[in-house]
Amino acid sequence: METGELVMLKTFHKGKLREFIVTVSDDELHTDFGKVDLSLLLKLDIGDHISAHKGQEFVIQRPRMPDFFHHAKRTGAPMMPKDIGLIIAYTGLNKGDSVLDAGTGSGILAMYLGSIAKRVLSYEVRDNFAVVARKNVQNAGLDNVEVRFGNIVEEISSIGEKFDVVTLDTQDSNDVVPYVPAILNPGGFLVTYSPFFEQTKEIRDAIEAANFYDVRTIECSEREISFSERGTRPSTMRVGHTGFITIARA
Image: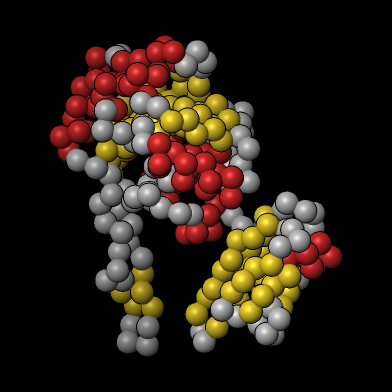
Protein backbone atom coordinates (compact mmCIF):
# COMPACT_ATOMS: atom_id res chain seq x y z
CA MET A 1 0.00 0.00 0.00
CA GLU A 2 0.97 3.64 -0.45
CA THR A 3 0.86 6.63 1.86
CA GLY A 4 -2.45 8.46 1.53
CA GLU A 5 -4.40 5.40 0.36
CA LEU A 6 -7.83 4.87 1.94
CA VAL A 7 -8.60 1.49 3.52
CA MET A 8 -11.24 0.07 5.83
CA LEU A 9 -10.36 -2.01 8.88
CA LYS A 10 -13.06 -4.53 9.75
CA THR A 11 -13.39 -6.65 12.87
CA PHE A 12 -16.02 -8.47 14.91
CA HIS A 13 -16.36 -8.05 18.67
CA LYS A 14 -18.92 -9.98 20.71
CA GLY A 15 -20.76 -10.79 17.49
CA LYS A 16 -20.98 -7.16 16.35
CA LEU A 17 -19.31 -5.73 13.25
CA ARG A 18 -16.99 -2.75 13.73
CA GLU A 19 -15.45 -0.80 10.85
CA PHE A 20 -12.95 2.06 10.64
CA ILE A 21 -12.06 3.96 7.46
CA VAL A 22 -8.46 5.18 7.73
CA THR A 23 -5.66 6.63 5.64
CA VAL A 24 -2.34 4.87 5.26
CA SER A 25 0.01 7.16 7.19
CA ASP A 26 2.39 7.42 10.15
CA ASP A 27 -0.55 8.09 12.50
CA GLU A 28 -2.21 5.81 15.02
CA LEU A 29 -5.85 4.78 15.07
CA HIS A 30 -7.20 4.88 18.63
CA THR A 31 -10.06 2.46 19.26
CA ASP A 32 -11.63 0.78 22.27
CA PHE A 33 -9.67 -2.28 21.15
CA GLY A 34 -6.36 -0.45 21.47
CA LYS A 35 -4.06 1.48 19.14
CA VAL A 36 -3.39 0.48 15.54
CA ASP A 37 -0.10 1.60 13.98
CA LEU A 38 -1.25 2.72 10.52
CA SER A 39 2.32 2.83 9.20
CA LEU A 40 2.27 -0.98 9.24
CA LEU A 41 -0.24 -0.83 6.39
CA LEU A 42 2.61 0.19 4.06
CA LYS A 43 3.84 -3.41 4.17
CA LEU A 44 0.39 -4.99 3.83
CA ASP A 45 -2.26 -5.40 1.14
CA ILE A 46 -6.03 -5.73 0.78
CA GLY A 47 -7.16 -8.94 2.49
CA ASP A 48 -4.27 -8.98 4.96
CA HIS A 49 -4.73 -8.64 8.72
CA ILE A 50 -3.44 -6.01 11.14
CA SER A 51 -3.67 -6.08 14.93
CA ALA A 52 -4.19 -3.44 17.60
CA HIS A 53 -1.67 -3.36 20.44
CA LYS A 54 -4.16 -5.25 22.67
CA GLY A 55 -4.38 -8.07 20.15
CA GLN A 56 -7.67 -7.38 18.35
CA GLU A 57 -7.30 -8.37 14.69
CA PHE A 58 -8.69 -6.39 11.74
CA VAL A 59 -9.17 -7.41 8.11
CA ILE A 60 -8.03 -4.80 5.59
CA GLN A 61 -10.58 -3.95 2.91
CA ARG A 62 -10.95 -1.32 0.24
CA PRO A 63 -13.91 0.93 1.18
CA ARG A 64 -16.70 1.24 -1.36
CA MET A 65 -19.40 3.86 -1.65
CA PRO A 66 -21.93 2.05 0.62
CA ASP A 67 -19.24 2.15 3.33
CA PHE A 68 -18.90 5.91 2.96
CA PHE A 69 -22.71 6.18 3.07
CA HIS A 70 -22.69 4.54 6.50
CA HIS A 71 -19.65 6.36 7.89
CA ALA A 72 -20.02 9.89 6.49
CA LYS A 73 -20.91 12.69 8.89
CA ARG A 74 -24.58 13.67 8.50
CA THR A 75 -26.09 17.15 8.39
CA GLY A 76 -29.58 15.77 7.77
CA ALA A 77 -31.32 12.83 6.16
CA PRO A 78 -29.31 11.86 3.07
CA MET A 79 -30.77 10.47 -0.14
CA MET A 80 -31.06 6.71 0.23
CA PRO A 81 -29.13 4.22 -1.94
CA LYS A 82 -32.39 2.91 -3.42
CA ASP A 83 -33.12 6.37 -4.85
CA ILE A 84 -29.53 7.01 -5.90
CA GLY A 85 -29.59 3.72 -7.79
CA LEU A 86 -32.61 4.87 -9.79
CA ILE A 87 -30.85 8.10 -10.73
CA ILE A 88 -27.76 6.27 -11.95
CA ALA A 89 -29.78 3.67 -13.85
CA TYR A 90 -32.26 5.97 -15.56
CA THR A 91 -29.67 8.55 -16.63
CA GLY A 92 -27.08 5.98 -17.71
CA LEU A 93 -24.44 7.92 -15.80
CA ASN A 94 -20.94 7.06 -17.03
CA LYS A 95 -17.28 7.94 -16.59
CA GLY A 96 -17.37 10.62 -19.28
CA ASP A 97 -20.23 12.64 -17.76
CA SER A 98 -20.18 16.01 -16.05
CA VAL A 99 -22.84 16.50 -13.38
CA LEU A 100 -24.36 19.58 -11.77
CA ASP A 101 -25.84 18.76 -8.38
CA ALA A 102 -27.76 21.14 -6.11
CA GLY A 103 -28.77 20.59 -2.50
CA THR A 104 -25.53 18.92 -1.45
CA GLY A 105 -26.48 18.24 2.15
CA SER A 106 -23.95 15.76 3.54
CA GLY A 107 -22.63 15.14 0.02
CA ILE A 108 -23.86 11.54 -0.23
CA LEU A 109 -25.43 11.83 -3.69
CA ALA A 110 -22.50 13.89 -5.02
CA MET A 111 -20.11 11.21 -3.74
CA TYR A 112 -22.00 8.35 -5.38
CA LEU A 113 -22.16 10.29 -8.65
CA GLY A 114 -18.50 11.25 -8.36
CA SER A 115 -17.48 7.61 -7.98
CA ILE A 116 -18.74 7.09 -11.55
CA ALA A 117 -18.79 10.42 -13.40
CA LYS A 118 -15.86 12.44 -14.72
CA ARG A 119 -16.79 15.55 -12.70
CA VAL A 120 -19.43 16.66 -10.20
CA LEU A 121 -20.10 20.29 -9.28
CA SER A 122 -22.42 20.55 -6.27
CA TYR A 123 -24.04 23.65 -4.74
CA GLU A 124 -25.14 23.93 -1.10
CA VAL A 125 -26.99 26.97 0.22
CA ARG A 126 -25.92 26.44 3.86
CA ASP A 127 -22.27 27.15 4.51
CA ASN A 128 -21.96 24.79 7.49
CA PHE A 129 -23.44 21.95 5.42
CA ALA A 130 -20.98 22.69 2.61
CA VAL A 131 -18.06 22.43 5.05
CA VAL A 132 -19.22 18.98 6.22
CA ALA A 133 -19.84 17.81 2.65
CA ARG A 134 -16.35 18.87 1.55
CA LYS A 135 -14.85 16.89 4.42
CA ASN A 136 -16.91 13.81 3.51
CA VAL A 137 -15.83 14.11 -0.12
CA GLN A 138 -12.19 14.46 0.96
CA ASN A 139 -12.49 11.42 3.24
CA ALA A 140 -13.84 9.43 0.29
CA GLY A 141 -10.76 10.36 -1.76
CA LEU A 142 -12.78 11.99 -4.55
CA ASP A 143 -10.85 14.79 -6.22
CA ASN A 144 -13.41 15.13 -9.04
CA VAL A 145 -16.21 16.43 -6.77
CA GLU A 146 -16.35 20.17 -6.05
CA VAL A 147 -18.72 21.54 -3.41
CA ARG A 148 -19.54 25.25 -3.67
CA PHE A 149 -21.41 27.39 -1.16
CA GLY A 150 -24.20 29.24 -2.96
CA ASN A 151 -27.86 29.39 -3.91
CA ILE A 152 -28.35 27.47 -7.15
CA VAL A 153 -31.34 29.69 -8.06
CA GLU A 154 -28.99 32.67 -8.15
CA GLU A 155 -25.92 30.87 -9.50
CA ILE A 156 -27.22 28.67 -12.31
CA SER A 157 -27.42 31.38 -14.96
CA SER A 158 -23.75 32.29 -14.49
CA ILE A 159 -22.08 28.88 -14.15
CA GLY A 160 -20.80 29.02 -17.73
CA GLU A 161 -20.40 25.31 -18.52
CA LYS A 162 -22.44 22.41 -19.87
CA PHE A 163 -23.46 19.21 -18.11
CA ASP A 164 -24.74 15.78 -19.05
CA VAL A 165 -26.84 15.33 -15.91
CA VAL A 166 -28.38 17.87 -13.52
CA THR A 167 -29.69 16.68 -10.15
CA LEU A 168 -31.81 18.93 -7.92
CA ASP A 169 -32.69 18.18 -4.30
CA THR A 170 -33.84 21.60 -3.11
CA GLN A 171 -37.04 23.35 -2.08
CA ASP A 172 -36.59 25.70 -5.05
CA SER A 173 -36.18 23.04 -7.75
CA ASN A 174 -39.17 24.34 -9.73
CA ASP A 175 -37.50 27.79 -9.90
CA VAL A 176 -34.28 26.21 -11.23
CA VAL A 177 -35.88 24.02 -13.92
CA PRO A 178 -36.39 26.82 -16.51
CA TYR A 179 -32.63 27.46 -16.60
CA VAL A 180 -31.59 23.82 -16.96
CA PRO A 181 -32.05 23.37 -20.77
CA ALA A 182 -29.43 26.06 -21.41
CA ILE A 183 -26.75 24.18 -19.46
CA LEU A 184 -27.59 20.60 -20.51
CA ASN A 185 -25.77 18.90 -23.35
CA PRO A 186 -28.10 17.54 -26.07
CA GLY A 187 -29.78 14.40 -24.75
CA GLY A 188 -28.82 15.23 -21.17
CA PHE A 189 -30.98 14.44 -18.16
CA LEU A 190 -32.62 16.50 -15.44
CA VAL A 191 -33.39 14.66 -12.18
CA THR A 192 -35.29 16.14 -9.25
CA TYR A 193 -35.94 14.69 -5.80
CA SER A 194 -38.93 15.89 -3.79
CA PRO A 195 -40.57 14.41 -0.67
CA PHE A 196 -44.08 15.82 -1.15
CA PHE A 197 -46.79 15.50 -3.79
CA GLU A 198 -47.31 19.27 -3.90
CA GLN A 199 -43.66 20.07 -4.62
CA THR A 200 -43.50 17.30 -7.20
CA LYS A 201 -46.52 18.73 -9.03
CA GLU A 202 -44.87 22.16 -9.13
CA ILE A 203 -41.73 20.56 -10.57
CA ARG A 204 -43.74 18.69 -13.21
CA ASP A 205 -45.47 21.92 -14.25
CA ALA A 206 -42.09 23.68 -14.58
CA ILE A 207 -40.69 20.78 -16.61
CA GLU A 208 -43.67 20.84 -18.97
CA ALA A 209 -43.30 24.59 -19.49
CA ALA A 210 -39.57 24.12 -20.27
CA ASN A 211 -40.36 21.61 -23.07
CA PHE A 212 -38.49 18.60 -21.71
CA TYR A 213 -39.47 15.19 -23.05
CA ASP A 214 -39.57 11.58 -21.82
CA VAL A 215 -40.69 12.77 -18.38
CA ARG A 216 -41.48 10.30 -15.62
CA THR A 217 -41.94 10.49 -11.86
CA ILE A 218 -41.04 7.42 -9.80
CA GLU A 219 -41.42 6.35 -6.19
CA CYS A 220 -39.16 3.51 -5.07
CA SER A 221 -40.06 1.44 -2.00
CA GLU A 222 -37.65 -0.97 -0.36
CA ARG A 223 -38.63 -4.08 1.61
CA GLU A 224 -36.02 -6.28 3.24
CA ILE A 225 -36.76 -9.95 3.84
CA SER A 226 -36.22 -11.35 7.35
CA PHE A 227 -34.99 -14.93 7.89
CA SER A 228 -35.37 -16.72 11.23
CA GLU A 229 -36.06 -20.15 12.71
CA ARG A 230 -39.76 -19.27 12.91
CA GLY A 231 -39.97 -18.50 9.21
CA THR A 232 -39.32 -16.07 6.40
CA ARG A 233 -41.25 -12.82 6.02
CA PRO A 234 -40.87 -9.13 5.15
CA SER A 235 -38.93 -7.35 7.86
CA THR A 236 -40.83 -5.09 10.23
CA MET A 237 -37.92 -2.65 9.87
CA ARG A 238 -38.21 -1.09 6.43
CA VAL A 239 -37.47 1.96 4.34
CA GLY A 240 -40.80 3.25 3.09
CA HIS A 241 -41.46 6.50 1.29
CA THR A 242 -38.47 8.81 1.04
CA GLY A 243 -39.18 10.96 -2.02
CA PHE A 244 -40.38 11.21 -5.58
CA ILE A 245 -37.78 11.15 -8.34
CA THR A 246 -38.68 12.98 -11.54
CA ILE A 247 -36.52 12.34 -14.60
CA ALA A 248 -36.70 14.37 -17.80
CA ARG A 249 -34.60 14.71 -20.92
CA ALA A 250 -33.60 17.81 -22.81
